[in-house]
Length: 117
Length: 288
Image (cartoon, rainbow over all chains, first blue to last red; front, top):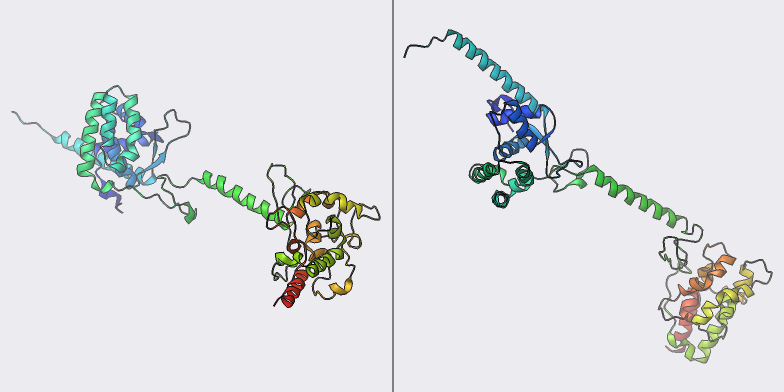
C-alpha cells in the first residue's frame, strides 16, 4: 500500500462508485451493484467481473474490509464489505478533487465562447 | 445451461480469485436475469485475471490477529474465530481442573469416581490401581513361581500368610493362592473377622502381625496396613482400618492386585516387598 493517499488519485470510475456505495454501510457484492445502479439512475452498471477485480485491489490496499458471510443471511455465499477509515479518507480526497474539477470546469465553461463552425 | 457455462468460466479463473469470489459471483448469477451478459462478463474477467492480475494469484496468508496469541494461526481468510477458541479452551481448562481436583482429593467423592471399582454415574468404569505397598522400596524381584513347589518354600509363604489374619482368612483352603472364588468371598470372610462387631476391621483384627519378631526384621514395614499389598489395597482411604464399605467392595479391590491377570492372586502379588525380598534371599541361599 502506498503511504500517500493522494497517490491513489484519481480513482477509476468503478472504484469511486464502489466506495461511494459502501458509505451507506456494510454491503455484499450484489447489493453494491444495485446501489451503484441506483446512485447513477441506471446509467452506470458494474458487472461482477469488474466489481470483484476492484474489490480484491481495495481489500489489499485496505480501503475496504472484507467481513465475510453473515449467519442470518438468506444466501450464505454472500460476503460483506465495509469501507475503512482509510477508504473513507481516499473517497473524501477524490470528492474534493472532483469538486475542484467541477469548479474549474464551470469557470472554463463560463468563459467559453464556441466558435462558429 | 448458462449457469453451467458460467460455473465453468469461474473455475477457469485463477485459484485465489475463484476461491475468494467465485461463490458470491455465482450467487449474483443466480439472482440476476441478465445471464448472457454475465457469461460475457465472466469471459472478460477470466482474461483480465490471467493477463493483468498476476500479483493477486497467490492466496493471502491468514493474518495473525494482534493480541490474540500465536496459537490462533489459521488458514481462514477471516482470521481466527474467537468463539471456537472459547468453546475449545474453556472446557479443556475446566476438565483439567476437575480431574486434577478429583485426583488431588483421592478421587472418592461418594465412592463413585476415581479410585472406586464401581461404575460411576456416567457409566464409565474408572479404576485406579492400588498404590504400591511401599513407595520407598520398589525394589524387590518377583517371587519365583516354583516357591510353592518346595516344602520349605510353602512353609515360608504359609508363615507369612498367617502373619496377616485377613490374608490367611481369605485363603480359605490354605493353598496359598487366592482363587477367584475366594476373592469373591472376601467380603463375608472379612466381616467374620470383626470380633467386636463394630462394622470396622481395626489393624488388631485384620493385620496385626502375630510374629512381631519377624516384622522387626523388615525395616520400613512396621505399619502393616501400608506395607502389605492386600491390606493396603483393602484400606482404600488409607485411614488405617477397613470400613464396612471397603469390606463390601473388597473383592473388586483385591482383583486389582492381579497383575498378571490370571484370575488368582499368587504369593508374589500378595506379600510385601520385604517378605518377597526375604524369600528371594532364602531361595538364592538355597539354590545359589
